[in-house]
Image 1: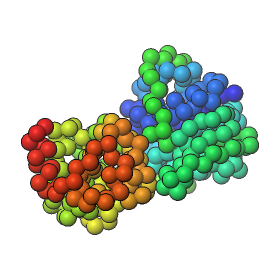
Image 2 (image 1 turned 180 degrees about the vertical axis):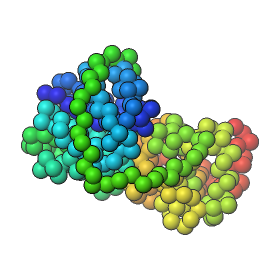
Image 3 (image 1 turned 120 degrees about the horizontal axis):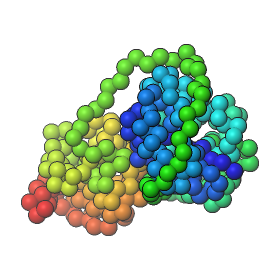
Image 4 (image 1 turned 90 degrees about the horizontal axis):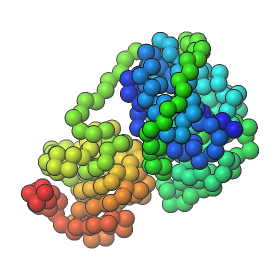
Length: 308
């Protein structure tokens, strides 16, 4: 039984999510192979070869994969699918773009956002915004799976897998890369940050969100926001934490002026330590917080910064 993990990367650096997916794939048993589909991505394949538990890295190096167009990457995965019992993707924007195409072409049911592996054919995944866990058993010959990376600790480094260059699937011609706008920030990437400071509708305005900057600076944190704050225009879309935003599980999550709607809790309740500041004693966020402070955030946040 061999398992294929689709690596996430930018043609220069392997994304941390791949380590979590390898950890999930390793629980199946058997050989774990990693596919690196990219352009001039030999350095990424070298990084993947050092992941503990990986027995082989397959490098598909072609200009067709330079911009990770989902149609082209899916073709490469399908060219290899016959040799594997399981195909794993990270449940990220990139993984969710490719995996359904692969599942549809293989005529199998995708198993989405797993958080545990019970056996090679049985998995656990959250439903109802994380309020229930479904146990899913699949009888498909090839299982196409996306992994909620917060459900698995990252695989360790220290491996020495062989890197094999394979023939590349031709570009489908179904899509063309036009351009990309990338948000620039000196802060850590939200999805992989060790510390996250998030603001909610209680912040009151986009201008007031700047109150969080000194706190995030002190903690070396990424900035996040609730959906309510994003919808109100207080924060950009890529800061949104929640079921319809980014799923995070940092070592420390600081929720400022966030009431704690189910949608938001689904995106951060696996954080190791949760600190909440809210003036409403009945706010649901206190139900999951390890430390709660009932206070006016406009007074409390500057005081916390001073104390730090």
